[in-house]
Length: 112
Length: 116
Image 1 (cartoon, each protein chain N blue to C red):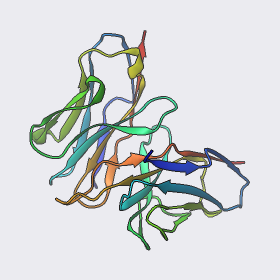
Image 2: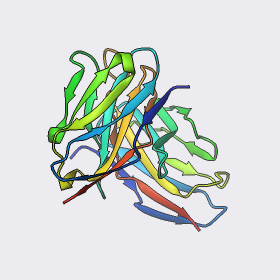
Image 3: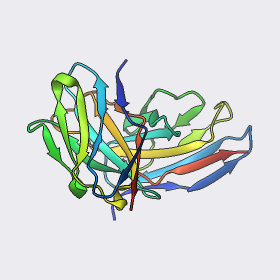
Image 4: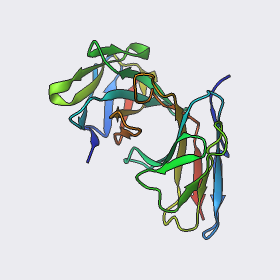
C-alpha cells in the first residue's frame, strides 16, 4: 500500500538552529509532492510543492525541500529557524490518481 | 475573499445522534475532500468528490455520509454508526490540473466534534 513516512514526530530546536524534517514515500511511479504547515490556531496551508523540473524547490518563509527520486524522499529544510516556525508540518504525496496521502505530521517547537 | 468555510467550529453531540458538518468553497474548485485529523495519525481521507453528484469513499468512510448537490458545497454527516466520532474534521478543495492529477489542496478551519 502507498504510504508516507515522517521520521520525527516531535522536534525541539533553539532559534537560529538548522532544520531538516524527513519524508519518505512508498510509490514507484510519478508523484507530486507537498509540504503543508499548520500554525497554532490557523488553517493548514501549503508551504511548498514539487511537480516536475528542478528537484530543489523553494517555498514560503525561507523553507526549501529536495526531491531525491532514488531515495523516494522529499525532505524539508530551513537554514535558521525562528520562534514563529513553531507549527505542525505534514508531508503529502499525490500519485496521479485522485488521492493525496499525508504523513503523520511532525510537531516542531522552536525555543526563543 | 476566496476560501473554504466550515461550520460550526465546535460541535457537541450526544451518542446516538447524527450530525452534519458544513463545508462551502468559493474557489470554483472541482474537487472537494473530507479528512479526519487525530493526534499522531495525520490526515485520513473520509470521502472525496470530483464533480457534482458524484463522490467516492476514502480510507475511513464507515459511519459517514456525504452529498454533493452543488459545486460549492460538500456537507459531511457523522452518523450514529461511527464508533469513535470525536475528532477534528477538515474540509479541503483543489483544482484539476490540465496535465493530469490535482493541484495542492486548500483547507478550511476545521470543525472539532465531541461526542458526549
